[in-house]
Amino acid sequence: AGRYEIVTGIRIFDHLLSQLSRHGLFDINVSATGDDPHHLVEDVAICLGKALQEALGDKRGIVRMADASVPMDDALAMVAVDISGRGYARLECEFAENDMFGFATDLVRHFLKTLAAEARMNLHARIPYGVNDHHKAEALFKALGRALDQATRIDERKEGELPSTKEWIDE
Image 1 (cartoon, one colour):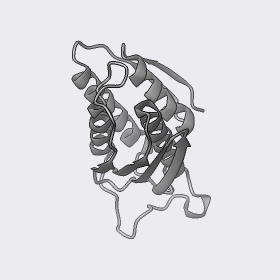
Image 2 (cartoon, rainbow, N blue to C red; image 1 turned 135 degrees about the horizontal axis):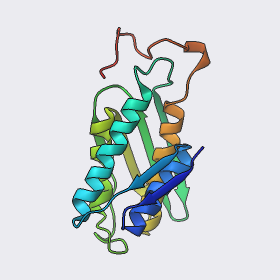
Image 3 (cartoon, helix red, strand yellow; image 1 turned 90 degrees about the vertical axis):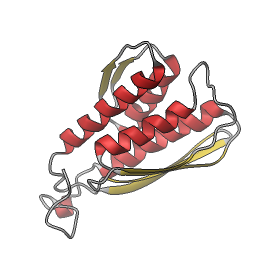
Image 4 (spheres, rainbow, N blue to C red; image 1 turned 30 degrees about the vertical axis):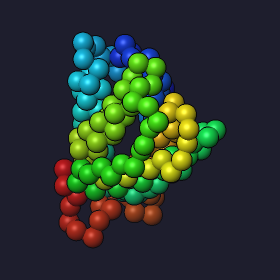
């Protein structure tokens, strides 16, 4: 439904995660604390990736692959995902500064790479243009939410089938 309760102590990170929840229609409850923002963001990504992996089970019937493009004022973000059982991230996400309201923009990339590894999905993300780092990051999390929403949907035409020509998707 896209409901969320997110408290990490890092307001911009909470805001980005709320975009993932709202636009992906995922209910997310996160309560995390820590002295080091790097480890806190990493731990949240690990938990969310594992939760997604667990929620999808054997992945029977899911669409599996999807993409989304989201504009936000001056910025455009594009995300493609394949819930393939293989964790890989390819990111072309340049930020003008390395600080966004006290939040290192490098943590956006670190979150995405860790999420992809733990959810065992291919994640390709690109921000072809934009000026405002907040707009770029927010568009990216919205696009990720929309792509994951599409990829995790059940395709009624393939209900009960693995979305693969192989006998399994790595769990």
